[in-house]
Length: 191
Ligand SMILES: [Zn+2]
Image (cartoon, rainbow, N blue to C red; front, side, top):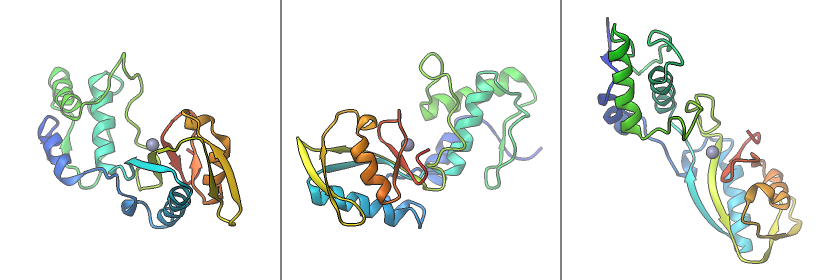
């Protein structure tokens, strides 16, 4: 049986080999210019942008997802598919040991488990592959922001970005679409 058993080794490994990014430059190459143009329009209008996350590493997402499911008994330790470049052995040949290895990873990565989160970390997030960005956009009062076609739109600040449909329309004009109910999240398709 090949591979290195699940456990804290993989936390260290991921922190070297599968790092996430909060740089716009790490976004997927067709999405990146759209985000850059949107951010420039916002900044030109007087908004402040704080970028929290862009590209989530596929291998990191894989490790997050499957350690969560195994530890919580949502799948068998033998269930995870292989991912090329991640030579991990999830199944220690003993359920208790397999879960203990998975738990070391949950702790090491700081993953939320029930009751804090009842959903496994996503392996289909648009952040994987750099098609989404999490950012805080703030300003005071009302500012004017240009849409892609050059028309200026007055947009009032709302602390809940999910409710600011005017801002969503501006983003959409650049091809950066808001996911409702996920405050900082914008993506190429709004998911
Ligand atoms: Zn996001």
